[in-house]
Length: 109
Image (spheres, helix red, strand yellow):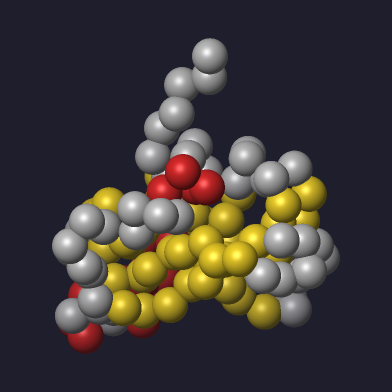
C-alpha cells in the first residue's frame, strides 16, 4: 500500500506568494480540485481566506490552503511556481493524475 502524504509546496511557490504580497493582503493561495475541464477534473487556484477544515501549509508567513474535499486528489502532489517565456503560473505536479491536457489545469485519475 502506497503511503499517502499531504501535498507539499515548493520554495519557488512560497517565494512567489511573498513577491505578490499575499500574506500582507491577509490572503492564502487556495488550491482546489473541481469536476470539469477537458479531462474530468480541473485545478482551481485562487487567493482566498483560509476556512475551517482547510489543510494549511505555511512558510515565512505565506500560506497555501487545501480544502478537505480536494485533499485526497492532491495526496503526494507538489504545488510549484513556473516562470517561462509563455508566462508565469502556479502548477501542480500530481502523481495521482493518469492523464492531463496541454493547459496543465485539467486532469483525470
